[in-house]
Image 1 (spheres, one colour):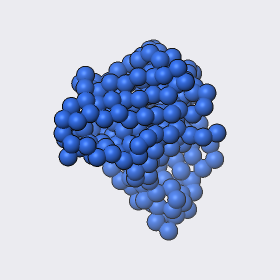
Image 2 (spheres, chains in turn red, yellow):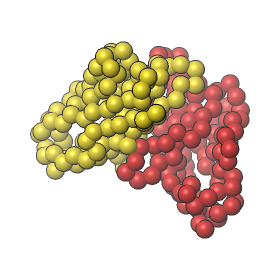
Image 3 (spheres, chains in turn purple, green):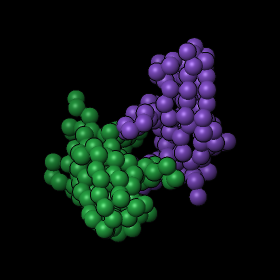
Image 4 (tube, one colour):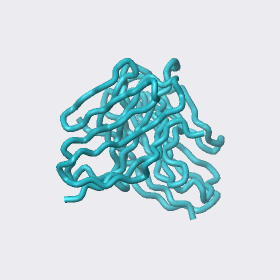
Length: 114
Length: 115
């Protein structure tokens, strides 16, 4: 049972345009959401996060939006750069327990075309 | 500040053997978690440690075990290796357990191939 879903396995965007990566979750019992970027044969790199009490968080070119009623979050990258080409994972942390455990989506491969 | 380090980076073993992977967290981080990444199952939580105690465990067989030392360094062990254990094993560290907006930072991983 996949609690965190990234329904688009891949996305191709032109350099300078906006990249929008989406993530849906089925469990309301998450209190913290994160986005990671991953290159092959490397560990995930933390990008940006958002608490469940907020609906938007911005950091430079990266903005994460959280829509709790739709159980949906998205990552916006503006402007997209070729170096952004990687696999992007969304992750969610269950609330209520003493844990940092993350449940990951399956990832979206972003290709930014020069 | 140095990031999370994992050793070895690559490992080849045969079925039935056992393996030990090591993780050194970011200095000052006391919580360590382990994840397995495979093409079929994605990134899955194995277990997490804090103050030398296992705090949570994922849905993996007992062949997977771990421990944490007093300096927060952690090891995981897989006994009686199976072909399906071939994966990228990732370690992540954070400052504390379950803090508000506590973020995990990942190491580069250990690529294990079981033949």
